[in-house]
Length: 551
Image 1 (cartoon, helix red, strand yellow):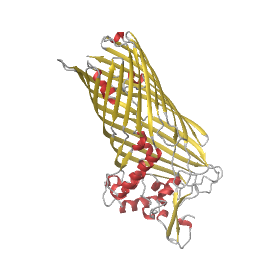
Image 2 (cartoon, one colour):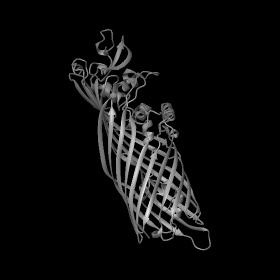
Image 3 (cartoon, rainbow, N blue to C red):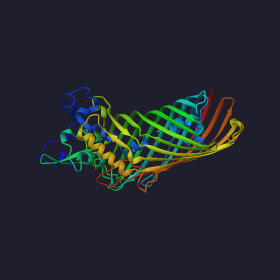
Image 4 (cartoon, rainbow, N blue to C red):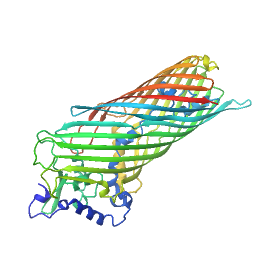
């Protein structure tokens, strides 16, 4: 029974106040401390930010591909031992030691994606396409003079796109077990801990639960003036269930600017190091809605929509080092190691809730709307935190067909990389406010990451056949499943092919890469009840062209 319906013995709860009264009280009690209150960190501690970061965010920023020039992508991204391509800067910088001359290159491209989903037995699909800048850089090759066995050194400055976040998702299905609102009820009831006091429920979570509470989507049960629990009128077990729809639009990418150095000792041993400065930008707009399918106009729920907007920006640092050994002119063997990337991230979030409670009209209307800025003095919810991505280890081998100094007389090559990435080593730290809640959240998330993810092996193979100034290339890449559970296979396959032209210091390469991936998407999780996931069957393609000049 709702708090306002429980009889004269009850104390009238905060819940029965109008939305405008709640906002006025909130601003008086909280914002009188500091009108700017940079996004409520002082007043709310971890409560305002914690729910923007999760295990899937860590994986998104850690699961990277090779990227690079069209030539490298045509051979599956296998750049660990071949050398002579600016992409070596980001894979095995020892490959820069093969540059005896200088060159500049740029790689624009176009991508398109098709995602097919199945959620609770309902199939949906969504498409996304657009232009991208894949790679741009310059290499300075400098031969040494005299009798030194150090034949040459090379220095590179390069931009590379390692991940593309541009995507769209749409799922829908009829749920007869749980509601999205259950997650907010759990948060307010705080199972296993302390229930959120009634007088702070209106500002506790300005991105979700508080919006639902203030618009009467969530209510409080009060007996003899004592708060018993929070609950929702959304009941998926009613006849017909509830229709759930989840629509997500994402954009952004993970880019890396690198300074690389490679050297050549006696045409047998090549050593390299790169210092890398990644940046990422991620934007997501998500609308999750539920509609009552029972046909009952008196159950105090018709529909709701929750829309959240997130912008994440980050800068970071990592280092990559490697070696390539050529026991003969035809054979090259490579080893590489990438340190973890240390990212400093900043989130800016806002949200809105639109609710219709049918015949329940305590404020004289059925439909209500509230946004985060009503509770935060017009400011977005912002938070700064850190993420450490996994280290990587790489072994590679190449065989060259024909090693004539005149590249027009070389016949081609085959090459392969094997890479190990320990996704279980991803680690969050929420230490900006130094609160105990921050540390507890980081521990919970990091333990969940260790339980959810595992080490994965990535394999990339490719080859090239040369015909005077023309070349034909093909490749394949397999990125292993990062999840421990055998029931979830999120492995990814890339099939690629391309053409190349090289003549008199000019080259142009054209490549197509086709991606196939299966995954699972979970719209929400619950502690106290089972929840559902959607199967994901994703495919897409990318066309890239590199144009370069040697000088």
